[in-house]
Image 1 (cartoon, rainbow, N blue to C red):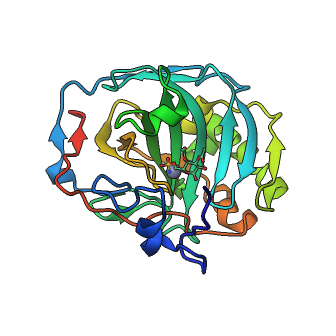
Image 2: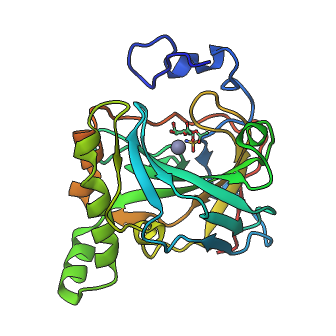
Image 3: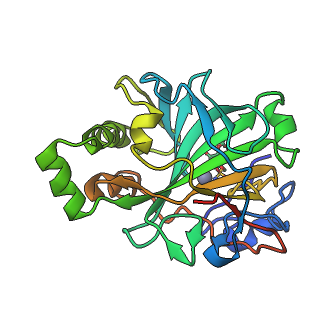
Length: 271
Ligand code: SG4
Ligand code: ZN
């Protein structure tokens, strides 16, 4: 059942009222996102490296959709995530973005109350479960969250003078954001023909340094079925490209506010 919900606008259920949505779990005690307090994070040695299957495939993004709440990239089959202390093999379903109106806010998770301008979520479902079943299982889904920050002027001049590795990341984000003007209308979608891999979008971010906690989908129906991974290092994207999300897509501030921990522990890798 789809009930009209939104973040801040006038709608039947605005963010503070999500907990009253029927057939949803938004008022639960294991909700996401959260603020991650660095000093409270418990080091867990079992949080090892991830294994990513087909993250280097240049043809995995099938299409990009404007859902009215986010911009979502639908992925082809065969993209998988395992390792990282997850204990299961997960199929990668899609990735989507959360952003603000300008570069001072936009991310869902915060670290020591610092909010980043954007956050990308790579959504994965346990391979041994149907989506329906996964949504009813505490570790049925695994979402990988990466913060996105504007490339600093220093880094920009370095990459242009040295023709460094960041040029290919820059290229991937340029290609991806070039599709936004084609999906200005809610529910519109565009097929992707440019070669963009997930690795290109993630760039050189350290994928072995992250936080881990149990939480929920950050949008209704807020199922408490997500093992969250929030990476410590942020993806650096050119500010002009980043601003295309609020500028080309007619809405912004699509992020949920921090939810109570209610006794949950946030774990961290040693580094
Ligand atoms: C976005 O609204 C996606 O479009 C949803 O995808 C997604 O739900 C939802 O965000 C919550 O995901 O990583 N932010 S989040 O917790 O992936 C799911 C769909 O509606 C189930 C398929
Ligand atoms: Zn999300």
